[in-house]
Image 1 (spheres, rainbow, N blue to C red):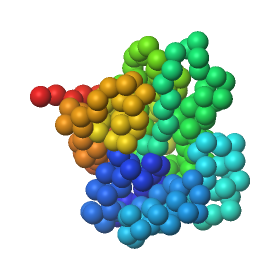
Image 2 (image 1 turned 180 degrees about the horizontal axis):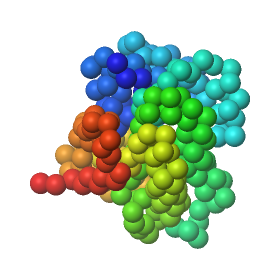
Image 3 (image 1 turned 45 degrees about the vertical axis):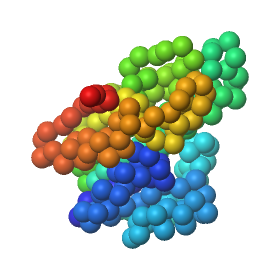
Image 4 (image 1 turned 90 degrees about the vertical axis):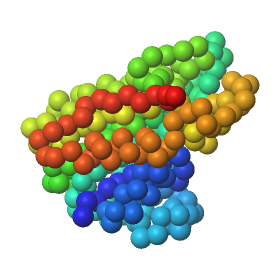
Length: 229
């Protein structure tokens, strides 16, 4: 039985990944921003355990984790949580930039640093669920795309550093996916939201599980998904 730490398990892609891993009997440790959210996640994913810390404040994650008892080994560290705020460069404030980079880039980096001993002990796997915005940037997407381009660099560096320890690193770049975040994007874009046009969270979850389940000695480094039809 594998042990996984998952961020973003409350909805969308993260919820689909957690459900799929839980259904096959893996041990889940779900990251929650506070105690109330932890209780919600435990109800949503029966049998899962939780770790509490606000990803919006990455500088406090070390303190938060130090007051808890994380697993001794981590087979899968799955970074799926994220935030998004659209706007032109001329209107984005430092507060928006700071919040976006903190949650989407700095928190995954810090959480990886803190749990790396457990990942090494398991010769485990770090998965970053990135975005098509991590490969290209469009108008009004600068803050989000910058955070996701940075996340790609983080993954690439981590892969090179941790290969000698047997740690695998995968980045998944989903196109638009039918999630609550996508609904928010459409509202900000002033566009009608039709979930049937986009990837399903379960399709992205299948991709994540495919990467996790490769035999030892094999690694998917980067994988891009897009809606088709």
